Length: 479
Ligand SMILES: Cc1cc2nc3c(=O)[nH]c(=O)nc-3n(C[C@H](O)[C@H](O)[C@H](O)COP(=O)(O)OP(=O)(O)OC[C@H]3O[C@@H](n4cnc5c(N)ncnc54)[C@H](O)[C@@H]3O)c2cc1C
Ligand code: SF4
Image (cartoon, rainbow, N blue to C red; front, side, top):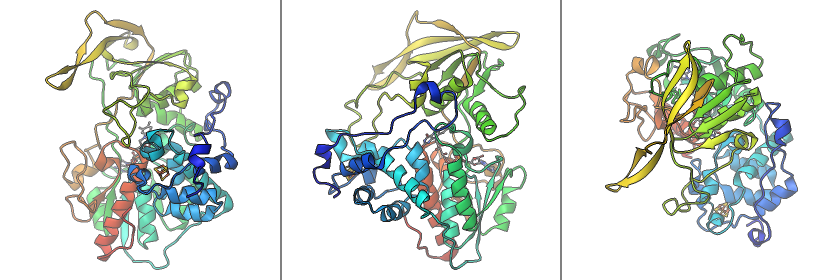
């Protein structure tokens, strides 16, 4: 245990964000560096619990109390080894994870939880700076080959584990760059893309071959890949976005979040996008439909582009400030949060349902909505419109950030004929193998839209299943 009295002596502290006035004029990450002396105090708050609920809370089973102790004792190299043992990419989760581990931290029962995520991020950045993160090419090659389709966190984790197990791995990605939603969905102000490139370099040196710009199912038949490779891993995400099915949806000015966000990320990366195609919020009145993280990403992007006014509508009621009685520790706290984008501007409104859109000459001008309430009926929560609460809001641009309905079916999935679950995700067994022998699946493609930490866990599990399938045994870890 780092410091037996640490949790009594030190308060929870998290890194500060750069001043709003300056950060809304650039695309750099919003958080400032966190001094190591402060971080060690935060690690010292860990109580090294007999039953560390943080483990259960983390989908990767990260060995959190161990690294808290090692950081406190300045044993950084041991800390990164312990961290990498369960997580291939702590620099992604350390920046982007909503930290279910912190929601489950025992200290959170009657105090503020340990700042686990920041400890994780500092360990990995310290390790990169010290030159400890080196390629780990397999000493013995198996001669087996695996095609990984989709280069998000699930595909990348699977690819790295498989390459280290000695297999020849090729990652196919239909986009122009590697990284999945981390590359083109998540804005740079949440994670600068140089951190992705740094991992790509390591993986390339470990023998992973990246083939961006190849849409499997269109540019190459998925069955052909299955014939060419000894195993295939489907990690294409859950990119089928939920539509807004109301009159006026077809008007110019209504876009899915994932039509909007990638354009700015591509421009930041130096791609030329003609002004006629580029969706910009500059000088516009913007409404974002959906109160989640994707909506917040649209908000931060629109603010940086110079939107005139931004509203974010959520159909559900405003979450409570602290845990409600049906959301107890150690479940993930569903509470009201102020993300960096919310701190920067825009206004949020809850219990609002869009009824229709109207416009002039084919262009969006107005959103028509009504307020809703949730009432208990036969023990179920039922949504009801509030009579007389209809209102209209002038708007130039609407971004739909209302969730995703699962993987896209045409192309790759239809060609392979893999079985789907009732929810329309790709069904995988306990080894992550689909109904087609030799075809495995990982990440959002099999879970539905989820989190990066889950995608990495899924990718690691699929790699283990594939290794077992190819070799008859596996030494790859379960977690
Ligand atoms: C805007 C946005 C912000 C988010 N922010 C966060 C966050 O802050 N923290 C967090 O934990 N989670 C966040 N998420 C969720 C998280 O990004 C996903 O859960 C995660 O990326 C899923 O990883 P994946 O590898 O399964 O799929 P993805 O990241 O979706 O990657 C799948 C890849 O497969 C490619 N592909 C699909 N089909 C084919 C094909 N036929 N051929 C070739 N390539 C193909 C796609 O182009 C894509 O690049 C966010 C999601 C969105 C949309
Ligand atoms: S639950 Fe919290 S206090 Fe307990 S070991 Fe995990 S991080 Fe430390």
